[in-house]
Length: 287
Ligand SMILES: C[S@@+](CC[C@H](N)C(=O)[O-])C[C@H]1O[C@@H](n2cnc3c(N)ncnc32)[C@H](O)[C@@H]1O
Figure (cartoon, rainbow, N blue to C red):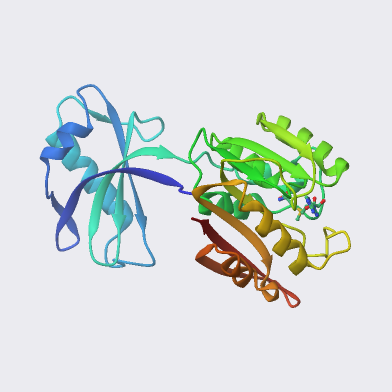
């Protein structure tokens, strides 16, 4: 979910509204090599430091960096390195950008842009957030036992997890298969089965959105019954110390079900969807 990250270079000191110096200008020589081009950008956090004009900070810093580093030049269109000045409420800092999230990548994964659509699927941003909360690491196995058309599996697969999906509905699985292939995710398995009787063991993490009995069917049982038998069974499937992030309608009391079955409730978050649905994201730890 991070848009951009980088390495701290230095604090920035001002005289009036003009950048006077970079506190640790020694760090600059580690950031830029002779012959490299750079640009300085800036960002203001929550309206901070309104007395300082961003374009002035960028210009002043550009001059200071040029002065303090040998053989470098400014290139605003295609710089080798980008510095970012962060205007935060209590200080202004300079960093060197090391990674950025590809622009528009999340919106390209929106449900309507996938080859197979179903209204029960989750938006990619929330699905990614749930996968993050399940704390998987690249190379580990993440399971979605109610995988539907694969929203969570796409996100986990793109993070480098080995993904397995299970669903009771063959048509949904076919949709998941097309969607995963479209985003270049090659699952370890997409299996027809019931999340209440899984035959796996040593799964590293689970991110899942079981049906609430509205868009996606709970096939005759109440959402509470479904969650209870799923969470009861899944205890044999998970490695000790692993995490599940799951979503449920708030009134289902999913965290109480988890607690009664011996899970540790790590965190939960409510998301208002509409008048008759508030989603609760719950993170449970096994062992
Ligand atoms: C809300 S959808 C999942 C959406 C998916 N995570 C996504 O973002 O694309 C819930 C899915 O659970 C499946 N399902 C319902 N009962 C099930 C069960 N007992 N075992 C496995 N899957 C089940 C439904 O067929 C449906 O596809």
